[in-house]
Length: 385
Image 1 (cartoon, rainbow, N blue to C red):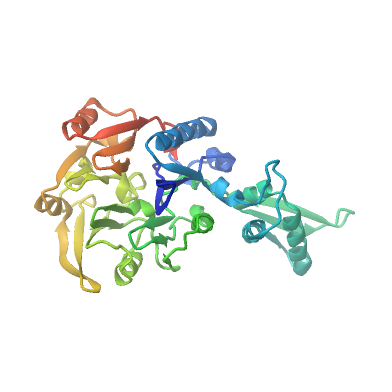
Image 2 (cartoon, rainbow, N blue to C red):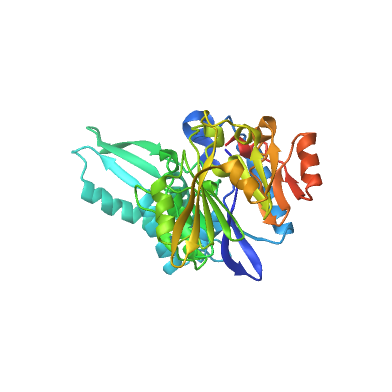
């Protein structure tokens, strides 16, 4: 339950690209029942959008080129008056939107006829409406009627309410982009949107995870020649093993953090652990102080790249002991600061981060003592997701 964006390895005009998705109308159904949407609380979407706009301005000031999902979906499909432009880009958008629109019904409904009808509607739809189809993933359940209307329908939306967490659908390594598979049914389809957007940027993924391989970007933190990846509530062993066997990490060392604690507030590695520099990390106190008999206790398996394969060099090492052995300083994050995402910052340079504001005095002091420059953003509504 955090906000992040996604860095890709390409550069445009000498600026690293950040791909984001501002929270929009597709969040409304989740606002009505936050629990079922994976939200922590009711979200004021208008305020969340305003917060996200400030976040994007911060990224821009920090030297990044910010592009949005909507911009990339629409890329090449409109002229300067918002009229549709026929061409490959619009054809691709139509095909993608058609895959997100489902016409269903009972045996009295002529399915072949309805499929042709769907193609007709897609061919007429304005690009803005095609984007709405993609973000809302509609299912139209048809039934025949005995009166002169012929057909009636129930309209069900399966909106991508969590798409604004753009870190999760993929990971970016020195090898390239790996498209993940999200474990929650509420987030089905998001990886396909991310992959489509990357293609608009000219980026082809080096691998896409299979059905039994769950990989979420929030479980992946890379710094220098070390990759940290968590196998736990969201990312599973099958995905980690695939990354290792295909040498997709692109770093000399991989630290596989093993988390037995199934808690939604710390579902991902980057909700309780993050890297600020080669020798400096932040770790939630409830993990730092956990004892081996509790599920909060973290262990790690260490893999080093030896020739053309990763070899396990340590197994079941207490994670905090590994950090100490590597002479890495750990800044503890209190439970209160963890609840406002004290470990869930965005590293943009050594000891320079973009972070969620409204932290304790102790947190601010710890960053200053360790020479961390922080750019603060207020995401009070966004983080309720």
